Image (spheres, rainbow, N blue to C red):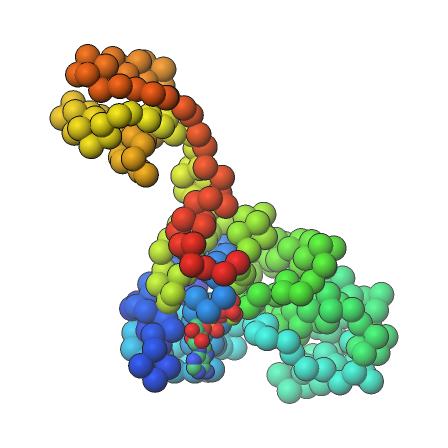
Length: 304
Ligand SMILES: Nc1ncnc2c1ncn2[C@@H]1O[C@H](COP(=O)(O)OP(=O)(O)OP(=O)(O)O)[C@@H](O)[C@H]1O
Ligand SMILES: [Mg+2]
């Protein structure tokens, strides 16, 4: 069996001639909390709807639990719980009664209802009519519904949308328990890095239908380590001089940028430039924030 619970190859979806999802290779490792990040309209929901078999890919392939969704649709989807868009409930029925409706549809024993209510911490409100639930409680009821059939993978499309900080915190705590307490991998989408950063172990960043980053969140964090910036009077020449010496340097907005802030390297680079009649105006250290890196990846055109 594949070590990925979701593994797509060149997954693509067009709406008429517009590309919503463009050849993405999504890889969600087993046991991960995979944060699927991107600005509005990036293609998150379209991707998720394809994974849930709600819409067909235009091209490309989806493997889940090591099997093809196309040929093993039923057995795969039995192992997936999901929350996409706001689910509708019977307002006059209690949380328990609403879950009982789904439990019957799914052929799940009633004993499971109390278990899922407990997991999402809704036991105290189990007998209350859902019309009296807060938005956060309704979202937790949605997650409870998704958990009814004991899934191995939970797919949540922006589960914290519209929630206040307390509601967001509760959903986050819940999600974070899933892999180790219940053996459930999670794919959760969001347009907020700050939210994903606190719970995800893996991150995929989608921009205009393309996956522009996918790795462990630690790898993204390493990107936010300090760099050395040199402002000089002849950036291109300085760049060439340093490259000739094998220095790992890039040119960014007319500044030379080194990935190291080691004092010896800094001194050597400065000396080399000055000896070659390049004026060094300024040497500064700067560590971009994770948010800077994210904004850079999704481009400034992204509406966040
Ligand atoms: N049913 C549809 N018909 C036509 N175009 C669509 C349809 N659904 C989505 N799109 C387009 O596909 C692109 C991706 O949309 P999608 O809803 O997947 O983005 P998203 O990342 O979920 O955005 P949001 O953060 O706003 O939920 C957008 O340009 C959108 O306008
Ligand atoms: Mg969406």
